[in-house]
Length: 630
Ligand SMILES: Cc1ncc(C[n+]2csc(CCOP(=O)(O)OP(=O)(O)O)c2C)c(N)n1
Image (cartoon, rainbow, N blue to C red; front, side, top):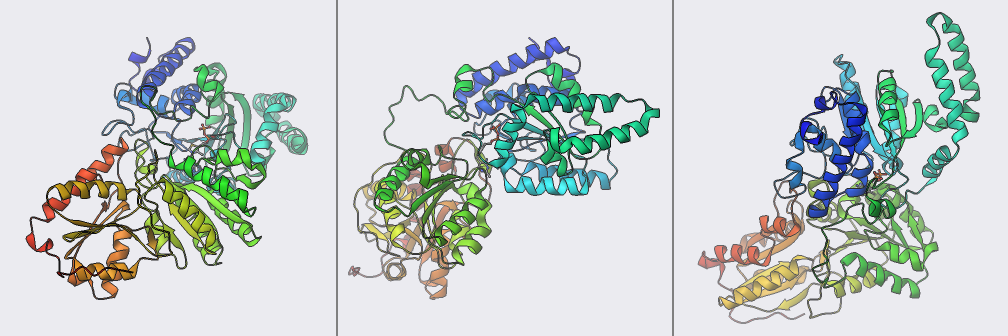
């Protein structure tokens, strides 16, 4: 057992090549064991074990900087850098994060969870080092999927231009979560499928490296020769033209090749890219065969009976049935066909389905073009990743008054993936945009109806729904633009709940009823436009109005109501209590656990209301007679 001896990267340096190979196997077994208990990013991390070992072996971390893009491939890095024992608490509340996190270790430089960010970070860091005359290395590991993100292209462009001292390790496994897509992907595939190119290129590199000093002129000539024939034979010409020295492709599981190669190119100056070929899921046959399924498996549910389809599937199935009737409908995903459920749509309508790769901003701009061309694009993106397309939503879609539908999946707290992945900001960043309609369904059937309703509107629409299993709550009024649904009439106080929180509020109301507290319960349905008529009425009836949303409170749904009351001078007539996520980045842990932390469960809502009602004046209703009718 070598694993027990490795408490920091320094310990790797005492091991022989053979011992490092055994260590790689031990690390793999540990990753498989822990992920089978806790869930997590299995396949990506298994594919990067040797890479993490080789990099820590060659670098002097943490003096040298090692940065991971997306960060989900970092488990071996965590294990090597002193977190072997705590790794058993992977993704657990107060345990070890599934992503790099500087608060956890000095070996983690950035919290990474969104793709295509790390080359920018590395270039910035390298330039900062240059300014302070720090000679340490800056190395970034990025997958071929993440390489296709616009931010990464922009960073490569900058890096080549200002000649930053950065080594980019391209971890090429031909997979994003699903197979990587795009012209650059095809280009990388071409490189690895033409071994003759590599052979000539590698020979040339070797020759140039070993030329004696006095033969410098020869070297220059050879370099010119290299330049001249580069266009014909150099595999990484794209990167070379961007200003990078390109090396590879090499086998990313062979430490005997990886270690000397990294050592040799580490101390060269300027932008360098090392193309490393890896297998996603390496060492675990199920994951190797099906890397998509094992990208981020959850804990086995074999003993549990699955009750309902998740919201993503409900969304996709409804979209398929709508697409049967309306041939203008097209669907777009940004590298998440499985996660968003759109893989189902793709099966039925391959020509009306687009996977743009990890490129959310492009997905929205592309949708704007499709809408202009008479299509009805539905863009399905997780709430957290849609943040990437903020300007495109405003400038390319809303300002142009284009009818793009945003299906916002994983809206709310997502659980174990933690702060990089919680979808808690979309209410705030969308509701401030003029002319957009923002909705949140209370259950599965309402999601289906809202999707159909969105298509009847000739404007941008957003539809947010949470992670996980769907359910049906019952009672259904027809959807009307800007109108809420009243689920229960009551006389003591009013709860206005949004989307996923309607169910929790509904259960809380039943508990309150048992205590003799009679609650008026509203399913808000619309974040924008608000049901102003109803909201005004509520202030005439109740002293206490409570809003509940699964999102950040700042700028959120409750704030929208507060702004409305403030504008109409109604705010001082009532006590408005907003329940939601307070002003902080929620941590990781089970979704249920996190909802409890923010009191966004039926019990949490119930308890908060009971506490509030200790102040008797809140309970009083204003009018003896109940007057509500539309
Ligand atoms: C901006 C953004 N969009 C989508 C995702 C979801 N996502 C997580 S990992 C991943 C695939 C990354 O592929 P690659 O960089 O090739 O890494 P690999 O998992 O293959 O090692 C995607 C699409 C994300 N993390 N960030």
